[in-house]
Length: 141
Length: 427
Ligand SMILES: [Zn+2]
Image (cartoon, rainbow over all chains, first blue to last red; front, side, top):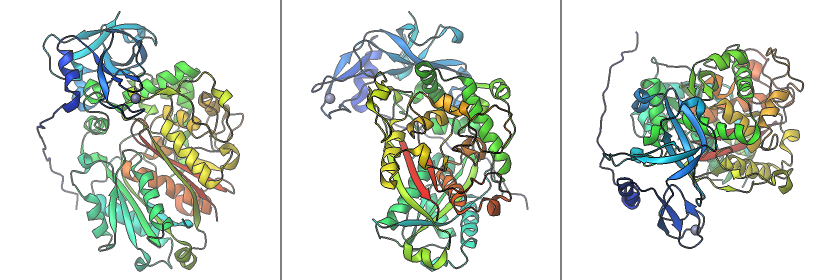
């Protein structure tokens, strides 16, 4: 006998708290990019975390410059189902002066062939916030 | 800790979908195959089991390993599930090793499976991308091929690695699989065909990436006492190691290389490590496994490697993490022909063809990657290699490495967040 196959739908809404990372998402609505700086060793994170990975001490919020450089990049022609309709899109890791780590974001307003490692980029912010990390993206400087 | 032996293994054919069998039946088939290979072995010698599957999203059945446990008739023996992304199978293998090495069990079964066919490929990619930070990474365009593309772009920038070198990995692994009836996607390819296949995330094309699969694999590990009773060609597990790294690629440090015994600090005077171009967790795993197995120079002391080539790029990156060549030389390493099988015509010029075959089975690229089964599948192929029984199990001996002494298996999760390396040795 052939196997019997049915469609089985599944859907859920989560109540999601940004918890200790909340100030980062609120800052995006004010056009600011917040990283973290370790209060003990000074290690500076371009993607925030409330405790230092190097030494375990608490970090304080640290305002990042709005200009950085492309550390690496890709243009996605396919993606997870949620993002498939947005393809092609370009992902970059951004490096900032004065930060030890990087920040993942989208690069908009650049032809995929024109993107280069080291290319200067600037942060842009959504006028109507969605309170997601995509409230910030980068464009060529 | 006491010596641990692998005494048998079994796998199912890896396929796009097995709608005619659920995960329990797939595991049962791999398990029965393993039992048939050691006729003197009996079920009452088994003290417990470890189950491995990656995703509750794919399975949509929590505690699925319990259902495999009861289906195998192993209740009420000890059991648990191990989960660690792409490294789930490798972690499961090591968990079973721990049970026997510690003396807690004399015989432990490691079983793994994944049923990825239950959703479409792009929903599957979305599930997999949920194994990235869901506050900071996933919403930006969560897509693992995109993450790996960014990593290899940086590797190309640091070292001059080329897309043609990556394509050579694809040619090698897909062609090896022509001789492996368990593989999902065996085919003859050229560098040109790899590059001309649809672009997924620049610079990675469809032929640079492994596929979603359904499949299962089983390994049986045992103490010396049990082994002596049932198996005349056991394989010894002489080293295990594992490592980790930060979930977010963006958080990886730019510091100093973790050195292997055959390397010196001066080899990497200007290298910022691991950055996003290398897998620090893989290097840590290799270092620990080599230390336990007494390996000083892996390229001289290994006979073959089965590594986690979810991407052609990550195979090249992993050559370096495992110390098969220096950091930065991965592209040249594949170009030299060293990781190809001897005696197979790949349609490529390969001056050192076959010195140290990597992924003789075809790897994830060609076998498929039913996540929870993958790391155990590698162990099964390594076991057959070291027993010299490839012909018996695959029906031909084209992939049999001649007189193998020592094999390495490598299982890898996320963007390098968990990685395992295990060393197996011939009888
Ligand atoms: Zn610190």
